[in-house]
Image 1 (cartoon, rainbow, N blue to C red):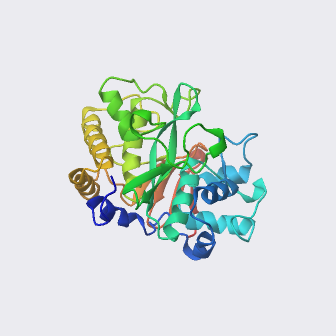
Image 2: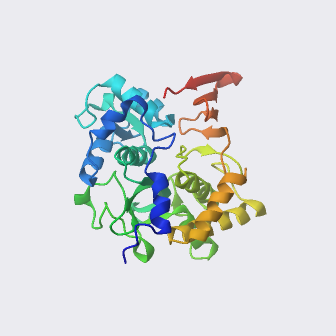
Image 3: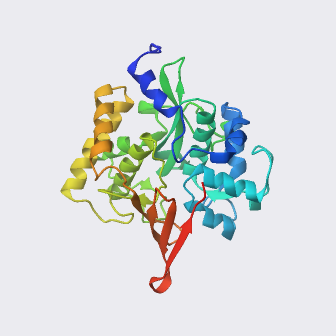
Amino acid sequence: MTEHPDSPAAARAERYRTHSAFSDPGAHAGLLHAIGTDFAALHQVVGNLVDHYRATPGGVGAEQQADIDRRWVAAQLDELVARRAGPLADPRPASCRLGGCCRDHSLLAVAILREHGVPARTRLGFAGYFTPGYRSDHVVAERWDAAGGRWRRFDPELDPASYAFAVDDLPVGEASVFRTAAEAWTAYREGSTDLADHGVGPDTPFAGPAFVQRYVFADLAHRQRCEVLLWDGWGAMASPAAAGLDAEQVALTDELARLTVDADAGDETAEQRLDALWADDPRVHPGRFVRTDSPTGKVGRTDLELRRTEWSGERGLVLTVAETA
């Protein structure tokens, strides 16, 4: 059933039509506007711009490995243009691409859509289509389908020819190939999974309830247009390799997961409650500073206002790296 254009869901979608601080391309808006908004164009461009720091065959270069802690699309585009000027759809060698991950592919796709005035957002969860029998942590995107009155979920990394499902309209519900973090947590609390098969990969220690708990918080942040890195942490989030959770963390995560699932189903009261928690609860909202546990092995304190990270180096040295915007 198509929703009326003045429905609460349609009205709420309007908040995702404009850029967030993270998706704003800065001086490079024209480069994004030159890209089409159909799935084929988004898939081609994000694959042309970003090589996955872990999944790229043969790995990425040292310069690309250092890219993975760039948060803001403006800073990413600054670096891409510096490495190779010209339209973003023009083929570029690996040395002229960025190192990144699913978050960067999806956020760039969202930035392109928002630049065209299309409501779009990123979502965090776990995909079952990379490793058989395992749900890998992943970021996908959603675009508002005004005609259908719904969010259309898609994965800009995927080649449609390689998958049996629609990569530009991922199935949800019982047939879901991508489970949001809130859905994964809810399944765990209902006893249908221990979440041992939800994480970075079967060959890593980053899996299980504490790891998924982080993603419940991070998905809410992305849903609130605060598209942080996957390794940023704040408030009541568990540390990346935490062995367990305390009672307060579990109770708060239960509430956030329930509200997110209900909000995704169209419950406007749940949406409003999430907005209130985000605005008022310091356990939920990242303040000015977040802790950054980079996959490069560095640990930093990131100032989201000044857009710079102070990294703890060897022997207590502190290295400050600023992102341009």
